[in-house]
Image 1 (cartoon, rainbow, N blue to C red):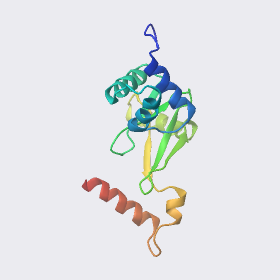
Image 2: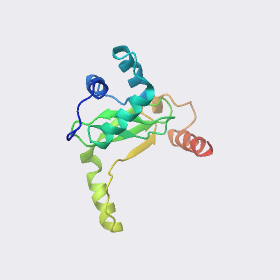
Image 3: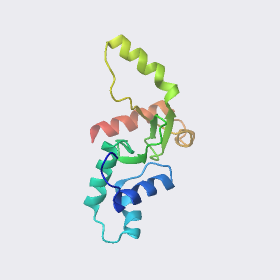
Image 4: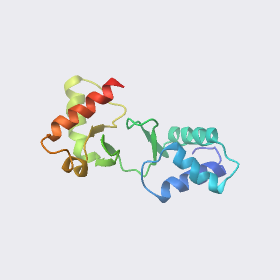
Length: 150
């Protein structure tokens, strides 16, 4: 965090994100932080999250919800699967897509600056419980089309 001081809001948000490794909505972060700092306002949480993202301590992802999600950066680069049925977010290890990024970059003569991949579909549990007589691929297409209409 260079020369900036570690404010109480920054420290508590970092501790919250570190305590439970998952993808947090800003409102969830605010709800936890407010228990410790009752006078904090949502705008302070958003400004602090922006600061932590800009300084590489927290990552932000747009997973197709009504808000972005945040998680602590711990050095392991990863990507995401997002279930369009239940909203589950599953991590994809960098090693599984690293070759894909390299090949696309070479083929298109394009320098990739942000290598964050988010794939949408159905998690294992939702795919298993898809309606009888309906293939998973049909359900995925319907979910995708529904999202494009909105």
